[in-house]
Length: 217
Image (cartoon, rainbow, N blue to C red; front, side):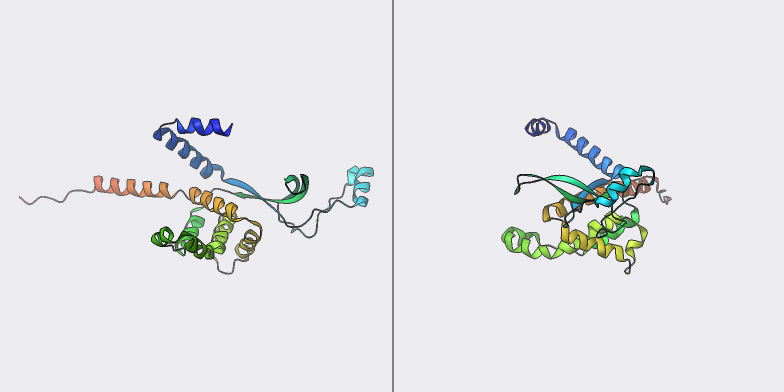
C-alpha cells in the first residue's frame, strides 16, 4: 500500500505535489495536531472494592484514578505491542493537542529558535562531531514543543512554571525522532512562508499605490 502511494506521488507533477503539501499545511493550521506519549509507570487496576460497589450500586458509581497521575493530565490506559514480550501490554498514554498557534506563541517560538546556531560548513566537513555538538539544543527543542502545546499568552512570562514542567516531561519521555518530528510540525504550523508571502504582497501593494512625486517641468 505504501509503495503504491509513493509511486503515485512520484508520478505527480511539481505543481500537484506543492498543492498537496499546501493542503496539508492548511489542515495543520486549521485543526492542529494530536500526539500521545506513553508514561514510564505501570498501570494499576481499579481496586476490587470500587468495582464491586459500582456493579451493585450503578446509580452511585464511584470514579477512581491513579494518584500518581496529576488530575489535569489527559491520560488513558491503552494496549500497545511489545516486541520484546511478543504480545500487547497496557500502558498509560498521555494525550496532547497542539492547537492552531496564536501570534504571541509563534513570536515566542521565533525568539527561542534564534538561540540555535549551526555552521553548515562544519556539518559538511565533520557531520558526526557537529551533530554531537548540536545535541545541546535538545532542551531548547523540548521547550519549543512545550510552548506550542500550552499555546497561551502567559508563556512569555519568565515565572510561568508550566512551560518548565512540560519541557522536563518531554525531555524525559520523547525520543530524539519524536522530538524532531514534532518540531518540524510546529515549524509548519508557524506558517513562515505565509508570513513571507503576506509581507511581500503588502510591500508590493504599497509600491504600486505610492503616489508619484510631482514632476518639475
